[in-house]
Image (cartoon, rainbow, N blue to C red):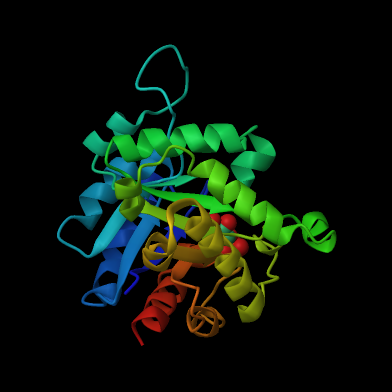
Length: 252
Ligand code: 13P
């Protein structure tokens, strides 16, 4: 059985103070809902507050990026070792916003993934096509390419710490959700790429999330699909009630 993972990606939202308040409010709402892993990926500055507030709860804390070098002259960057020592367990890598605005490439996504795994972090690796790429008919090719590139040189035994999030770029923050069928198909392309690169058993056991305007209203249908093993949630992860409703959908 694949593990369902419901992860919030807060992006550039919330301060340390708001983080502590949010998690204190959320914790009792999601307590005992253990049919899925519950993760909040938060801005770096919010990590200490998040880790402290999540102590003794079933909420796990993730970062939104990690640098691929262990240390050195990389002003503004954060290493995997720093994240681990701060109590972080997960890290989002290669989000489309980083690809779009911060020069992230398939190569750097791969390097970050390798560094995260080497440090013992769980990597949430994001892939997804733009609307133009979809309309040109490149979705399958692109998702398979991005997935394989991101996981180049990942060892088979490290795959248990890899989650792939299929996030169609056209569905992120737009309110336009992929239909459950489109999500299932996209996640299926990712799984097929894993099968091609690592074999069928690996493909069957890897968690593949869907992300892109997932919310309290559509989560149940999306999560009902065979290839959708959870969600990576932006906007709706900033509201305790909406995020809880998604966790509930995963626990139904
Ligand atoms: P929204 O849920 O706000 O569309 O964001 C999705 C996302 O990018 C999660 O990483």
